[in-house]
Every structure is written in structure tokens, then in C-alpha cells.
Amino acid sequence: DGGITQSPKYLFRKEGQNVTLSCEQNLNHDAMYWYRQDPGQGLRLIYYSQIVNDFQKGDIAEGYSVSREKKESFPLTVTSAQKNPTAFYLCASSKTGGGDEQYFGPGTRLTVT
Amino acid sequence: GIQVEQSPPDLILQEGANSTLRCNFSDSVNNLQWFHQNPWGQLINLFYIPSGTKQNGRLSATTVATERYSLLYISSSQTTDSGVYFCAVLTNAGNMLTFGGGTRLMVKP
Image (cartoon, rainbow over all chains, first blue to last red; front, top):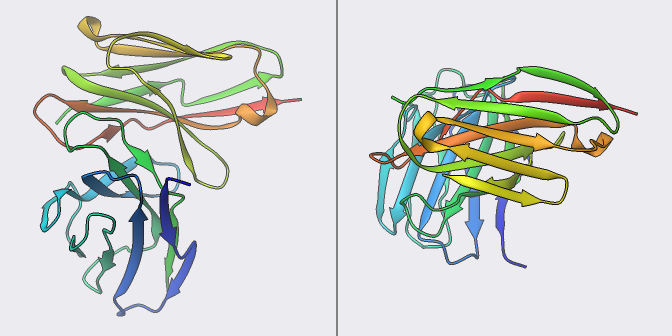
């Protein structure tokens, strides 16, 4: 089955710890994205990558880091510098980084206490 | 940046009723998508519709790019249609989707 997988589904961490969220796709898409969703809100872009070994900041990149070493994988690290890390995180991909349709993974709910 | 506004913010329907959701945007776009977010948070692609009209079963969408709005029609609504509907746009100059605030739909049996 082709698609986007995110793991884990739920993640709990103590304040001050870094945590890495996984995103894998087997759609052979060049572009991948990370979004954050807070309760009752729309999604906001954290980072995106149009090709391997390249990525750009979105609207709310502070406190986050990413890597894109493989086409299939785009992990997101939530660092201790992120002031309000508790949120729902969604990964997406598209064929290219232009106006192509984006498809989303099932998301990871991160709770930091 | 581009502004995306959705209306109404909340909608309650009786099963079998029809509805129209609206998305207004403030600039030219080269991508517009409608999504349904189910109660588990999964975003399901409904339409990729930067312009024109498309239909998929009980759902259809129309985007009038020159007037900067899009409409999502839901006919003969079912309880499984409940959830949040998002419109998202991508401008000609940008690489990121900008989401509206969503319309929260509840369909009662």
C-alpha cells in the first residue's frame, strides 16, 4: 500500500527533553512537509523539503529541526527550545514542491508536561 | 501573507440535509484543496481544485479563482460526514499551503 506513515501515534515527554517524530512515505514524492495543529485551529507549516538534503523554514520553525537524508524520510525534532510543544503534528508529501496536491499522514499527538 | 477565511465556523445539520461551505482567499492561488478531518485527526483529501468544478459522489466543489472563493457542497448529508472541513491554498509565489480556520460540521441522525 502506498502512503505516509507517522510514528508514534501518541508521544509523552517531560519538559526539557528533545523528541523526534518519524515520517516515512513510499509514494516516490520529492517534497515533504511538517505541520502543527493546535486545538480548534487550522494547520501551520513548520518546515518543508523539496529535495533530499535541502529544506526551508515555514511560518513557525523556531524550536524545531529537521533532516532529509533520504527521499522517503523527513524526521522532525522538537527541541527543548520550543516553548509550547504540546500539539498535533502532521506530515505531508507532494509529487513536487510546486502547486501539486499534498497528502497527509495520520499524525502524532505530542504531550509535554 | 495570504488570508483564508471559512464560513460558517460551525454547522449542525439533520441527516439528509444539504449544505454549502465557503472559503474566501485574499490573493491569487495556484493550488486549492478541500480536506475533511475525521474525529481521529486524519486529513482526508476531498478535492484539488484551483479552478472550475468537480464532483465526487455526494460532494462537489467549485472554485471561482477570479473572485477568490471556493464552495464545497455536501448533499444528502450522513452522520459520517461529521468532522472539520478545511480549505487550504497555495499562492503563485509560495511553497506552503495556508489553511483556513475550518468549518466544524455535526450531522445528527
